[in-house]
Length: 232
View 1 (spheres, rainbow, N blue to C red):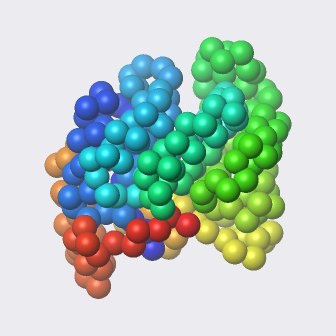
View 2 (cartoon, rainbow, N blue to C red):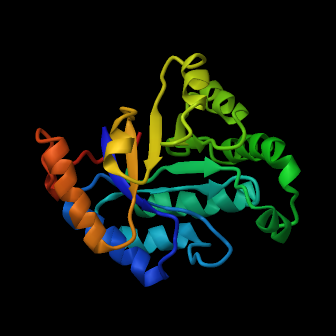
């Protein structure tokens, strides 16, 4: 199991970088940042944030999530391929449809078409970037996204309190990989995911979480040199 931390992006960019550096120093496997375009968030450009973080850390990097619906697939391919070249073997993507009607409108889209946009734009991203790193699909409002993940042998990410799509996904794929976003370590571990990301808001919370991981999983060494360097 990979254990990491994520932020939705409530901190300013410098604060997000500080979180990533703290996670790296604490020996976590993955750091992930969400994409949001409305207050109070400041993570509207996760690829830029992650590129800066890549230069300052050695931790694996991901998103939580990247909006596949409102972003141009060509732009996503350009930005994240550049990130992948800057930090080879350290990056992957968690794609999500988003759930804020206002944000859809800012990008000239309509939230009612969230699912078809997800399917159409993912096909285009795959066409443009056939050698893309590992992809996860986050599902909250559209269980059909679990079908998309299974069809392409991708991973599935769910929130700890909304795990219903997991069964649907497992029934369709020979190589399931489950990711869980959780507020606490215990609620995340209960689902035995392949990747667990815990929400944090400060370096102090990361240090507290490190202690919790050491107590809950004593067999797991918590030092930067001990973690796996693969995200696939």
